[in-house]
Length: 327
Image 1 (cartoon, one colour):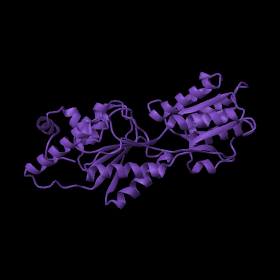
Image 2 (tube, one colour; image 1 turned 135 degrees about the vertical axis):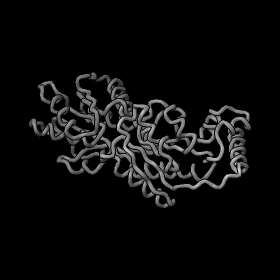
Image 3 (cartoon, one colour; image 1 turned 45 degrees about the vertical axis):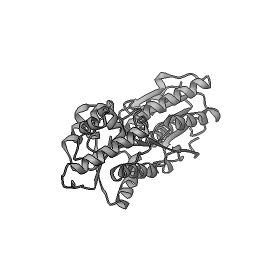
Image 4 (tube, helix red, strand yellow; image 1 turned 90 degrees about the horizontal axis):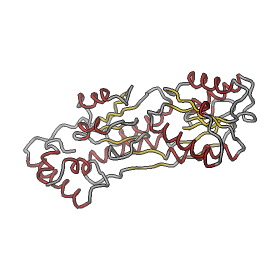
């Protein structure tokens, strides 16, 4: 990245807006190739002209996650650290407790020890990252925002969730409940939208009291929610859960109430983490390529650090519905 000149200085010489320079430096597909090449050429020239000594690079990547305790992230962590190590970088992980609040993003601007930033949570306002984007490259990982925030590596949450709910319906389930995370997460929004769309497409009723949103991916919260939904005689015959942790909770809630699984209650989870094969019965789930998500996000970030060529705006990886004994 260009640390000896400012975006405003590049924009003045290139006779374009600072927004255009920012988008060009971040690999946005909305910038014409001829304009991008002009901006990069000017930036390189100005960086050399300033006469400054080359700035020290820490070779440290900062990775911001919403919850470091969520088991889903374990393989993403491994993918990031392995990819960083092969390129000679180290990784510092940071937990963003409330990524909806502007104040939390001050950490990124107040600390300058890192060369690039990986973000694994939604960003409610891209202006929160403007001061950071002018200094270091950013890549979003697993979670992503629509628009011009940053390149990202993720899955198609809508397609994966729709496929999972459609499988439940194809197996004869008609009364389906959903255990979801907080809608401040984009993945939760996309998966719930897919759930509702699939139910509507097949003409099935959506019971709002059977859709629950939990503040965090936590087994205890999932168990309580599932018990409340299953306790009345008028209960669902299937759960679609946005996490295998919630799916394990739904299975154990059903067993605790004497409900036969999968005969009386089918359960589908999401992520294919280790717990999916530890429960009895084992969990049918959507498998994400979590290691690859982390590794490719890190590679994409380092490529931005070390090369000025345009980078892909998005990398969408495939998922797979793994059928096990809970359905």
